[in-house]
Every structure is written in C-alpha cells, then in structure tokens.
Length: 58
Image 1 (tube, helix red, strand yellow):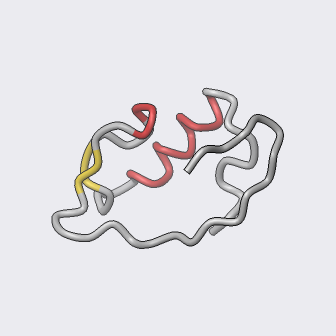
Image 2 (cartoon, one colour):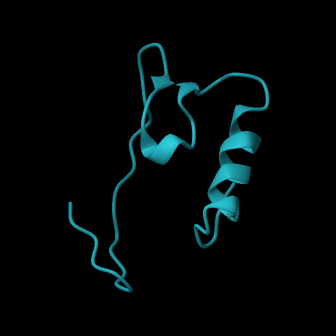
Image 3 (cartoon, rainbow, N blue to C red):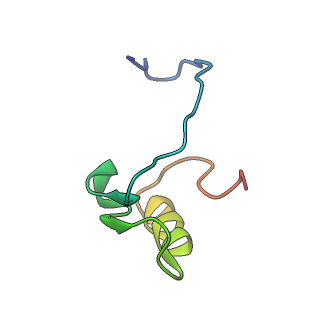
C-alpha cells in the first residue's frame, strides 16, 4: 500500500505470528517483539526519529 505524504489512509492491521522476530521497520525493532522492554525501546527510537504520534496508541 502506498501512503502519500500528509494523507490519511485507513488500514487493517494483522498481528505478526511465528517466532515474532522482526528485522527492518526502519531499525525500530530489529529483534524479538516480545523481549522485555522491547516495545518501550522501539517507541523511544520512533520518537527520536521524529515519528508523529509514536506511543500514543496502546
């Protein structure tokens, strides 16, 4: 799906299955999704990179 700058698009999200190890996503995770403190570290990196709304949804 293409996202245009400044645009809004409704999407359907699906959970990541299997071993739940993610590599990529702009380097925000690069490891197991269920690691202790992983979510907090990813959101901290997102905020540091300037992602708008990082951490607002829970």
